[in-house]
Image (cartoon, rainbow, N blue to C red):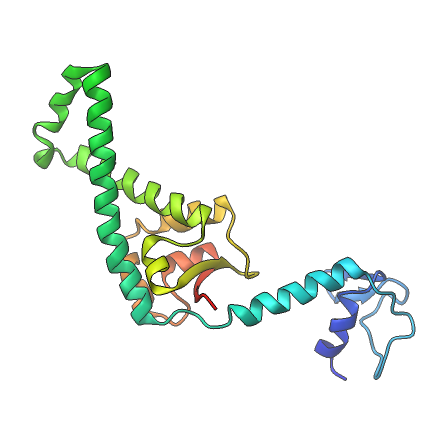
Length: 200
């Protein structure tokens, strides 16, 4: 029996503790497990065992990472959706300004030449789109259509902070296509410790 086989028991035992240098050790012996068939000191923690089983199930379910074709389709669909989102956002903003402060509508008259305004609208729309969909469902419209979703390193739906990091990374030049040149996913996947997987 090797170390990994023993850890299957240790990780669900009430007597386990973590040592910075040795990893998971037995609190009774202060050493890593060394049994060959079964541990006589094993005392099952049903909650820990359940967590381990759920973790194994999630890993099995989401073992298949989305291929580059699906990732590219996600990218194309989401680019279109971001611009649609920006149009909707601009439209709503225009209505609000028309009601509250009509003279402020002048900023939209020369919007094509207003680089700062265009960048603010693009930044807000992109961040809003990815945060809205990935933080709530783990799936953008592109991912919904291709049957994929984003998960964290533990196979769970990423938390708000992780999605924020992932979304901000998208503003790094060429990040949108970085997944084409790496096996570990795009830069926004690597830096946020997330991955895109096929939905079973």
